[in-house]
Amino acid sequence: MIVTESLSKRYPRVTALDRLSVDIAPGVTGLVGANGAGKSTLIKILLGLAPATEGTAHVLGLDVTKDGGAIRERVGYMPEHDCLPPDVSATEFVVHMARMSGLPPTAARERTADTLRHVGLYEERYRPIGGYSTGMKQRVKLAQALVHDPQLVFLDEPTNGLDPAGRDEMLGLIRRVHTDFGISVLVTSHLLGELERTCDHVVVIDGGKLLRSSATDEFTQVTTSLAVEVTDTDAHPDGTAALRTALAGAGVAVTAGAPGSESLASAGRLLYVEAAGDDTYDLVRDTVAGLGLGLVRMEQRRHQIAEVFRDADAAQTTPAAPATPAAPATPGAPGAPAAPAAPTREGGAHDVA
Ligand SMILES: Nc1ncnc2c1ncn2[C@@H]1O[C@H](COP(=O)(O)OP(=O)(O)OP(=O)(O)O)[C@@H](O)[C@H]1O
Image 1 (cartoon, rainbow, N blue to C red):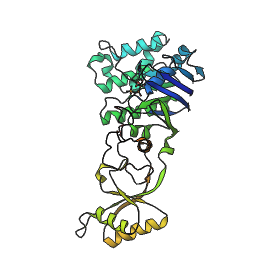
Image 2 (image 1 turned 90 degrees about the vertical axis):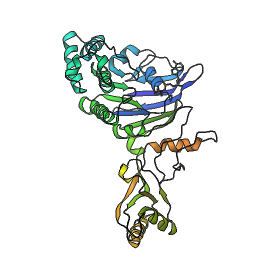
Image 3 (image 1 turned 60 degrees about the vertical axis):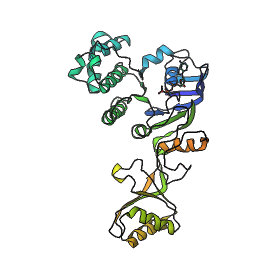
Image 4 (image 1 turned 90 degrees about the horizontal axis):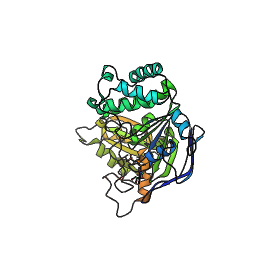
């Protein structure tokens, strides 16, 4: 669907894209990177709205340098910035955008009603947009990107400004754009966790360079470490600490830390144990039993996308870099928690959802 080869974009003072080569298949693809990583620049080049400095890019087989108009007919675009007119209703605005895309008046009205219903705007669609919440405005922006029934949509930071519930709803909508209508999606975000749940494939860029492009489940492969949670007892009021000491005494590599995907209720209570083989399971079980603790869970842990950043950051860390959070950031340490990564570029701290 999207192929770039050695694509670069240089502004006088900054290189926004640096020899980026990606090949993106149909489905839902996340483009993730910190603020300033080059995500919006890539989208503008792919739409034929900004020229690349060098390299090539094709969208749906069309060349971005020659076929910008044809690409924009087939591709929907939800921009990052607030671009909605405040004094017209969602219906008027989306009908207008449908007409601009070439739909005849009746089809434009019908498609608008369907699309606004699909994104969850009902009676309020007749009210002026200026009075809408951020979540409603994001839905209008999504609707105008879909109204002309594109093959592919580019969604630039669609969850920006939304609270956690609004973010979940928007992510669900994005997933359904593909499952219900067969429209492929390229969605950008600086929130790593949300792409993990929504996308089939994730492309990670930093400083305009490709860090990694993989299927989401390759990012989240099972690791060789076990997440272990135990209860406290009168004899061991801090069961986690007691188990940690006992396992360390038995020569097992143990790491504690704030969990990533695990529930907040478990925060601080998990131990990550490096599993050398089946013997490690037996050793953990026997140690827990020997201490008289209850075993709440023992499960294989999965990688999180955040670790791609953490490992890359650890490799690049310089003495001048701002301090990382308290969690250890040893490259490849299987038990290390998915803590927020250190900023990799000036002002560009990564968020972890
Ligand atoms: N028109 C421009 N002129 C000069 N520099 C620009 C221009 N547009 C973007 N840049 C710079 O290029 C880099 C990449 O910007 P871009 O907007 O593509 O990043 P991004 O990943 O989309 O981040 P954000 O989500 O913050 O917009 C940034 O350093 C930005 O300041």
